[in-house]
Image (cartoon, rainbow, N blue to C red; front, side):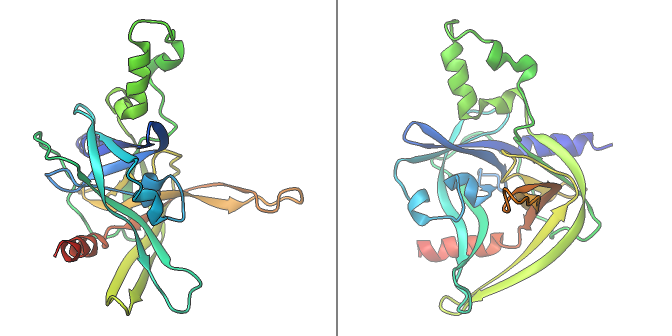
Length: 268
């Protein structure tokens, strides 16, 4: 029933790897939103941590790569990484965990991007995808491979740079929106207003899926995965202990027009 939709999602998703010099510091998922290869993801996928610090993503030694199934590895530049809104009554800025990446050089092959849809409604069925840690290479070949075997080093390095996208593709799951709330923030100094839906789907994704898309039945991207929801399992020996709750948290994509407006302003 959903074969065509799942195929569309798989083609539009990419495996993102981030290196600082030669060290892999972050992995996650992204998805194409334009035919020229613009990729949307979670900001913490780019920096490897939260809160988002400008010094992290401005580091000239930082390299971001995206690997779509069946295509060459692409280096990306960071257009926007996190959206900061200053609210006078808050102790710190509100950060929206979203990032826009653009190819570092023109890409000649065509992309299969999502169109952007409205944020999902309460009770709506959605599909979400990512290169989650749940995925394993067929037969766990990376563990069976002898280190001294011909080509073993090159294979393992390629896997580290996202080439598992060719061997596994993303994991696609289904869920229903069990909670949805709209947040509205504004910054008087820059006359910036941002509206964004925060919602929960009643199925869980795991590490590596951050930055992947939420998609509706029509095949439109309606959100981005930012984290798996957690709940307290506090004990006397560990009062701060949290465990996964079985849900996934997403952010709506209403911010994308504002992101492109900001890029145009910065370029002017």
